[in-house]
Every structure is written in structure tokens, then in C-alpha cells.
Length: 327
Image 1: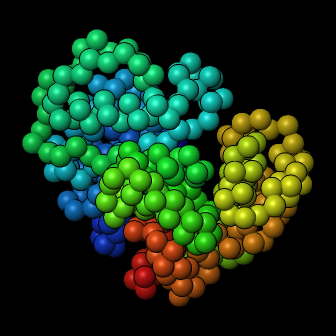
Image 2: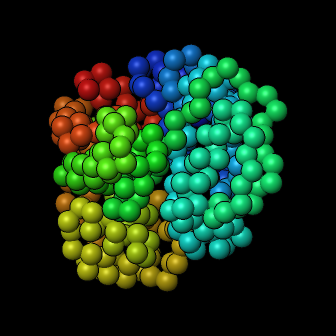
């Protein structure tokens, strides 16, 4: 998205459709969550505005808390902060510390304390901060912190320490059910109300598209996840699929030798070409495709699996009218 301005109209349309939350997947360049959250807050009045996701260590703790509370004040308390772990290779490349479970838990605590107006003195896995405090905070609650997770350790972390979990795209309904059960069991073990931890299932949606366009929207997007070493294996394992099948995908001429994210070095057409090497079940069994009614049936399966809210991914709000009307 080289031009961020179309996102403003998409935010307006999302609210018009009656969607509950507007999720923004932050990417450095033209998708800065703080800037766009401020803009969205001024053209909408009811829809929640969520980072899906940013990272606790990509901004200084006081800067992240300041961003969150400024956006809370602008939006009258509609902000949610989704955070993720990402991969060690990325943090090494940009010169920032890698995440550990302890650093994530401590950083979340620092964030909440700052948002409440407390003074924070801290020296530990999340960094060294002799004296942190926000000078002014609006009369708004601390934004919910939602943790993006896929594996058992991440799901446990979400259940014990966060306000919700954001599940990864291309999980089957059965995988969502197992994930939701793991999160809620961890919440109970930590002495928390399991219903207080929201389950957000990310569902890739492509309705009413021609076969070629559907392959690009869904198959090409799936490739960008499955081709990443170790992450593709983790996604396959969560779904109960054979990770050995990833070898054929990664050997595709469009992917061989790609070390990072394929979508940063390959075109949409090239990713779609590589998607032909994905088993059909790995796409169609973990996304909402076809007619609006077919999409609704898939939504129902995710809700029955324990999802409190579905994050519709892969289609912009202007493409979701018929799907949402029937959902």
C-alpha cells in the first residue's frame, strides 16, 4: 500500500457496514498504526480501531503508551493494541532486541502501568528504564492488549497475561477450536475468568471472485506464510497437516532461494503461480471462499469453534457488502 489515503474511505465503509472492529496490519512505510488510528478516529464514531499487529519492542515503552492513550483520547476509548512476537531474524536485521516470554509479559505490564499514569522504574528482560511516566493522559481506559499467537507457548501466554488472542490466518475451524481451548485453559490455570480473554480468529475471505482472482487473493497470500522456514511448519502442524509437503512449495522456481518474506521480492502473479504447489485443502479448508452463503457457513464454523470475533482478512470493506449482509 504505497498510498495510505484509501484506508480512510475503507474505515468509513467498515463502520457503515456495521463491522465491530477495524484491524490494521502495521507495516513500516505507509501503514503506521499511530498515524492511521488518529485519522480513522476522526472519520468514524463507533467502530473499534485495532493494531493487528504492532510490537512491544518496536517503539520505546513510553512512546507506545503515549501513542495508545493519545489515540484513546481522539477516539473516545475505541483503541485496541494487538502485539506479536515476530521472528528473531527480523529483530536482528533491524537492531532491536528479540522477544522472550518474560520480556513480553514485563513489557505488557509496563505498558499498562504507563497508560494508567503510574511512574515506572524497571530493569529486566524488557529493558532498563530508570524513570518513565506519561505527563498527561486522557480520562480513558487502558486499551486492551491482544497477543498474536499460533503455537502452544504463545496461546498459553495469551491466556495468562493478555486480554485476547489474535489467531493466525489459514487456521482450520478445528485448529481454532483447539487454540481457543488452550487459551481458556491457561486463563483458568492463572486464576482468570476464561471468558475475559477474547478469541479473535483471522479468516481470509474471497467471495464472488473469478477463479484467477481468487487464486491471487487467497493462494498467493497463503504462499507468503507457508514459505517462511519454521513458520510454515508450525502452521501446518497446528492444522494437523504434513509439513513435509512444504518442500515442494519452497522448491518452486519463484520461491527457491528466497530467504525472507516472499511478498517483498515477488509479484502477485509470481506468488499466485507458486500457489499451485499448495494442497487445495491448505487453502480451501482454512478460508471463507465462494458465494456469500458459502462464506457465511464457514463463518458459522469458526464461531462454533469458539471464536468471539472474526477478523475478515484479504478483502477490503468495499468488497464485503454482500458477505456481511448475509453474515
